[in-house]
Each structure stands twice: as C-alpha cells, then as structure tokens.
Image 1 (cartoon, one colour):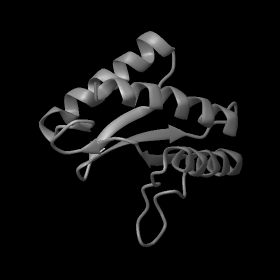
Image 2: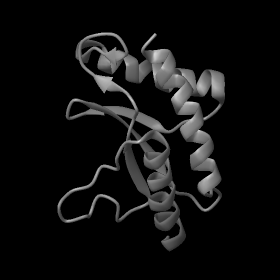
Image 3: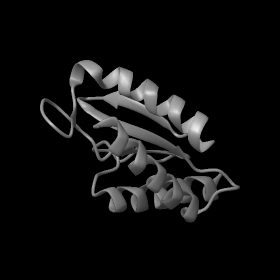
Length: 116
C-alpha cells in the first residue's frame, strides 16, 4: 500500500510539473493520502479560442475517456470539478513514474484535440 501511495503522489507531482498545473489538495492535505492523485488538466474552461466552453465540459470529459480507451488503449479518469478539468491517476504496484510521464504525453495530445 505504501508503494502505491508514494508512486501516485510522485507521479502526480511529475505530471503537474510537465503540464504546469497543480495537484488537487485540501488544507488538511488529506486528498493525497491514498493511492489516487487528481491533477488539473492543461485546459482552461471559459469562452474563446483554445478554451473549453463550460457548457461543453462534460461532453469533453466523455470524449476524452472514450478516445483514451479506443485510440490509446489506456485510461485515467477525466472529470470536471470546480470549473476546471482534472484527471485521476491511480498508483498501482505495476506502474512507475515513467508510466505517469507517458500518460501525461498522451493526455497532452488529447487536450490539444479537445480545443480544436
């Protein structure tokens, strides 16, 4: 269990660094005391070019989830929360930080497609 929590947190920090975003956390710092880490996607919700319209945010999440499975044979759950798009990564015994880095690259491709 300790490895899974550590790899989730380390991988999540690396993804947030790559994307220039943040990890979801609360004041008590309890959201990352598990094997899951939520990282804000490099997408802005709002009006205008290069942004995801709030009215389309849930549709974008559904499209991302389906595209990850169908085209990339991978999954990390995207979701909309507090006017931002996030992804939940899971630390498992069979993954390492390189897997998080690879997922960050795939998600970056997906994010670029969402705003086109």
